[in-house]
Length: 246
Image (cartoon, rainbow, N blue to C red; front, side, top):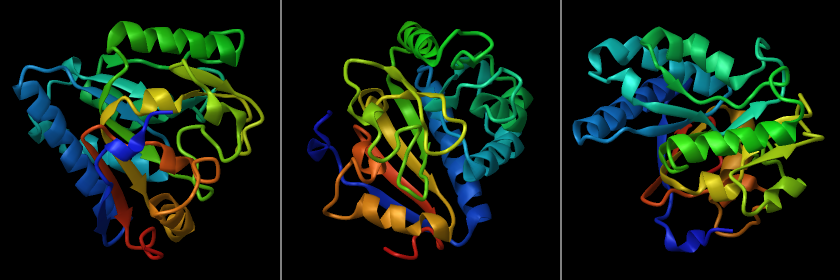
């Protein structure tokens, strides 16, 4: 695994509630994308699923017209995906498209193949890994990650064998403790190829996981969120409930 001890310590930013949190994250994301484009760079953005992510996506759509972002010159990826049919409401990609990608006119959206497009989660993971290699080189300018109450990120769950995956960009996940059971996730090695990592965390149910992730001591096996840091920056964007045990 990547030696995270050589990377900057995480920053913590706390907002009053989920609404304020979503607005702050969306504004910062739009600024980062616009700044990258102004510098002549095509930004690679890693998206996540979940309730707070959906709120962020809707705020991005609301604020997009004033942002100056060229949405055709942004590459989007997903940290993980549920291995379900393409039309399933459970797919992170479908949720993100409905919330903002289609509305703003994003055209470089790289999805994990769905279960009706690929014969197994393993083949979907291999195809997605090849897409990441071919399109953006696998290094994210901003990677956003949600955190579960158990401390999981993407589809990397506590104690799961996929935590130990090496030499792979993406891996199949079976027997997920959270439905659906079959998924595709980026590995720790891939997630750690990110300049900035943003954890998006809202709600009291996430407070213990947030505390464990940021504690001086603890294991990645117990709290997978401990296993990712940005090369330049790691920021935990929290609402006051998620921060209540810090």
